[in-house]
Image (cartoon, rainbow, N blue to C red; front, top):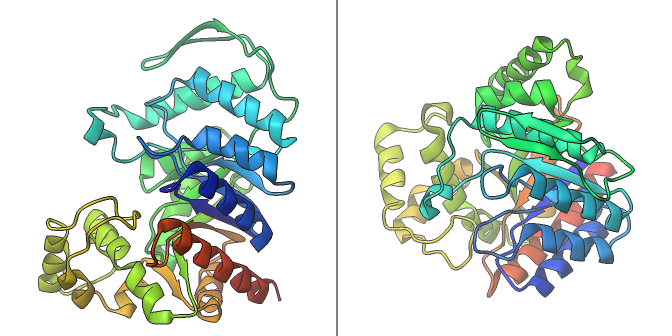
Length: 342
């Protein structure tokens, strides 16, 4: 089984690196560092964590092709691959929140396709010529290409991007958040369609579901800590989310108008009505939350849908700081993994 953990660096770089070390010690196999505009830089943090760890794979979870040119991504990945002794991976997707900075993301499937092609070529030591519809590289080559391949993971909720993952990715991250056998089958169908398009065996692609994970010995606190996540995903998933009474759904979505800050940032403001409207059952439709034993049980139910691992977006328990809250989830996650691995 493969277990990924993503930390969102809403803290000092030193604290983010400490969390990265704790993720390895907890027994996770891969570490993703969120790429959030105006927050500590994902690639610099990955390099610092690589210097402090020995086993865990390290990458972005996920970065995007719009705020950095493909050649800049390739250079950063080659550096990380060399520093880490071959433990780098590239997690990439459309990105989120770019519109707040006036950055548009036109034709995401095309942009990702051209970016992945450029990354493959540059990281493979080739001199790359791309005259694409959205990306141009005119005879560029990395000074120090990596000696080992850098796996590429594509995360998405989009049918088009999932099909692209079937064509070009090493890892496909299912971004549905709310997962049922029918939803999983839909994503696997998109993945298989993309693989068939290029004559690829779909079994070559590792498929992991993306889930929010919050672990604490205090079950109620863990659940309360992910209620904003639930409201966020209930809103963006719309009809693809779990069935909820229309009036209740409207009331929950309306609370987001008064909420402030990123949904994953402990400095956010969540209206009290939000907590009252979202109970434990609904929160757990979008997140694995509770004590280590409860989270192990929920995680096993997810694995029973046919996955060989899980990609966990770590949610901070509501403590004095994001660092303390994420540390609690990581420490609880270690106990959860022990139970899962038996």
